[in-house]
Picture 1 (spheres, rainbow, N blue to C red):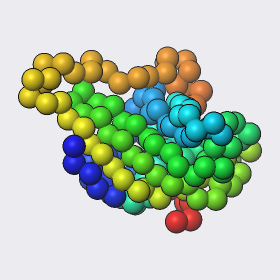
Picture 2 (cartoon, rainbow, N blue to C red; picture 1 turned 180 degrees about the vertical axis):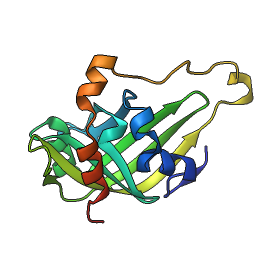
Picture 3 (cartoon, one colour; picture 1 turned 90 degrees about the vertical axis):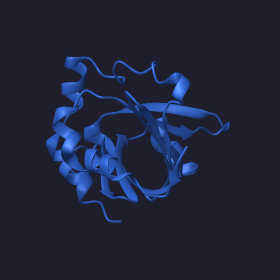
Length: 158
């Protein structure tokens, strides 16, 4: 499993805008650590995650949510990208969050990438693949998609 502290170029391109419109229904599991030390998963869309560089991301989460509290308390988070032939784990450390200008019900957090792990199937596993990654329903995904929010994520201070 190759490791780095930077996003692979194709993933950086996906998170910096290429996937925003074409994958508006795709779900990215976002894991934080709760007060008891257990993982907690939130489901984010490509419109709620943006690469500001190959070493930095910005995420938008619901204000007052357990995810926001976990990012404030514990700082560590993992973003999971699932594709047909690979799984990518992006481990990051959260910076100070702020209230979103375009949606007061969201907080924006900068994330400094600590480690990126790319997991590909072993030769004996090549016939097994994901038919599709997790997605929101057409109705649910559209409600979470905001061009204004995605633009704001791109302006976050690094």
